[in-house]
Image (cartoon, rainbow, N blue to C red; front, side, top):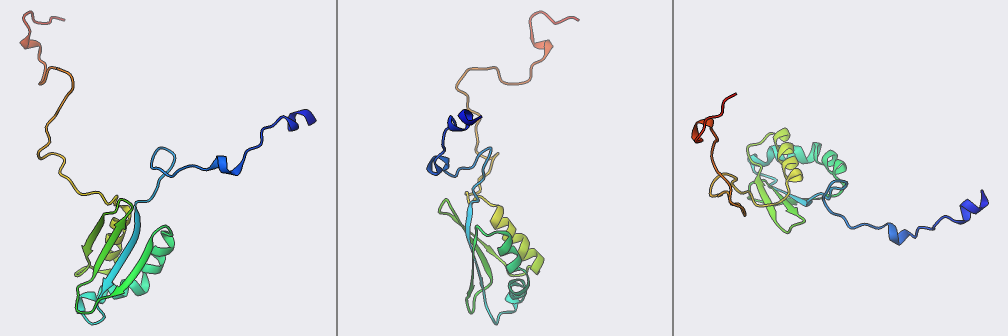
Length: 148
């Protein structure tokens, strides 16, 4: 029994380090900072002020990896701006939303990757590195029809 213990290999703490990357076993959140700007006097900022007083602390505790910044901008409409690891940012105006709608927009920023939105269908052409038949196959298009 004593020989089995002495033959084990020691693991150094530095060898257990890994680099963060998105993949099968790990996830690196893309949103790093959210800035909420509002006006103290504008009526369009009323719901944003209510959200900041009642709900922001709960969302911030749920997302400790994100820095939340609250800015007072007098004479401006309320805005939420998300900053991402990729260096991009997204801006969402918050005027006209109820507090639960503002929470949905904040969650949209949190769940977003920060990548530019692109159309998937428009302007995309199917390209292939190999020649292949395109189209629908039918037994009527062959020289000798297939008989079961």
